[in-house]
View 1 (tube, rainbow, N blue to C red):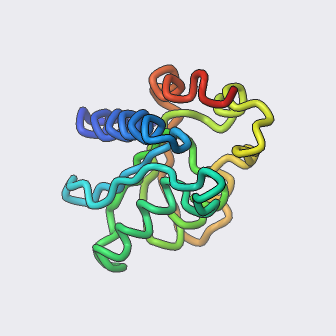
View 2: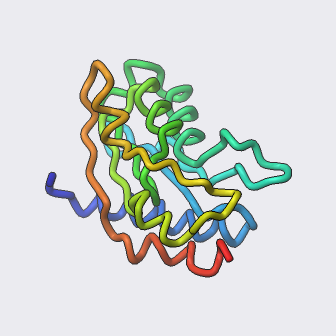
Length: 161
């Protein structure tokens, strides 16, 4: 596994804290942020897919990578990292790939998330690890995780019941 810097851990914990705030606002407790090659946070979003008003494609990771790509442009995405409170689903992994993310650091694994959500209809987990999605691409994306799973699980406890 790649050694994580103190800044990496701080960014990952920031995504978990944002997931907690997202829950407090009444949305699904997921969040993500994108850091550019210089270490600056360029986008940070919570989930916005909660029915009935949310858009099911507005997962936190997709929102963050799309905003970062708009802000930085294709050349600016080089060296960028997506930090996320939970492992990106297939849709979000695809968005990270297409926007030029070079590295993904995530906290809660899809497997652990499924243990927390069960068969909740608002989160039918996708049993397809992001590593498998990225492995099918033509460019490499470094993946680090799961990490800090107990911390990342906290915003989900009691939410899916």
